[in-house]
Image (cartoon, one colour):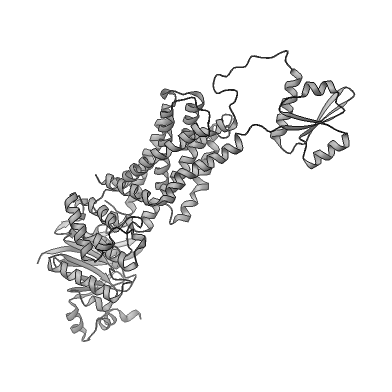
Length: 336
Length: 240
């Protein structure tokens, strides 16, 4: 019953504290949109200079991704120096050679790939089909599911942790513990209050990403919502737990580089498959790894519940573990 | 009179420091019992021990004859902490409603009680204002109201009048006398001498020990002085 009262109080506090609500809902939308702008653009044209390349070859080379400019050798080098050309193609003694500008690995890779595919040309064309995803699957589609999970995790961790900490610093926790409330009722009240809020938060963020930013989505929307909410609950229980080890808001912020940032590296934004077992074990003890894995499974590979059930159980396990530890941590403030 | 709080050989240590050193106290029901001492003497620790927030390292504390062991016993008292433990975003009414609901008062009873205590501390016209807009004195009064909302038999007040103007201080003491009339036991800590004189009985605390305990009148007679200040200097002045 007291769990309900604590939950009710938290929801009223949310109603009053519009800024924190905005941080948890609007900030993820804003950052996701910015990421989308950066990652989801159509590739700009590559600037290729051509020196002494015969007309027939140039025709063969022309495509929508290449912007070819014929110029002299010295001018080409000047433009490379300025950085206005990505590469220069030379034709000497019937041999082609390519000089790359080289400071941008993406552009360099793209140009090489482009020339490679032209050389192989149409004759040994392989019929390509996609089992998962599609031809248009961009970088944003790949990282999108992870980012949705990450932003929910990050903002719930911060807001949840700080509000629990403030309960301690403003003295209301002690005041509350001078009433017949159970320690577990406080912790569950927080889970319930934030849980209800994160349902709304997750719904908005997921809907926005999928229908407005059009992240590739092949799976069940309900599963996306379930995983996001579970991630949020794991973040909340972790945030409130570590807040017990912070003296003030500033010390709470210090947990971001220790607890949040490493999780990003292991969440699948960067491939971890080839890494050593012990590195993967580090990833396995992080909630975000499992949440992100499930999110990608659902959104990119149309995973069924059976496919993601283990990730779901693990997330639930994390929440249960952090919650139990938190109830014990409160013993520091009252023995009963 | 029955005893409300019994403390026997209570010792409390925090890491290696002894904060409370072998305290024996018996607080009768219906009295205003004062704990007077300089800051750092252990007054707050003592009231937290009585409130069951802290557990004594050694010794026993009992409330109405039963050892402090169950959460349900916490219903018997109201606690007003030194800092205003209020939710800043919530209104006065919502704060009281939250604390009242934890004591399982029915909705109707809650409404009555909140109206009563707001009346008592003169905050009725501010009930729908968020606490963050309150002045320091208003917050103190609301904290007092929160400690009283469930009609406890015992109220524990930790420095209730610190940082409060004389008019308001008097009005808070008038409330306390009124509560005493109704049979409520009051434990109050203070470091203000003239406030100490308003208590029925007074314990002088220094370095975690009770150095004297009696009615303010008798304390003064014993050492043959006219003010509490001199009493305190007599018992605790060695370090000065």
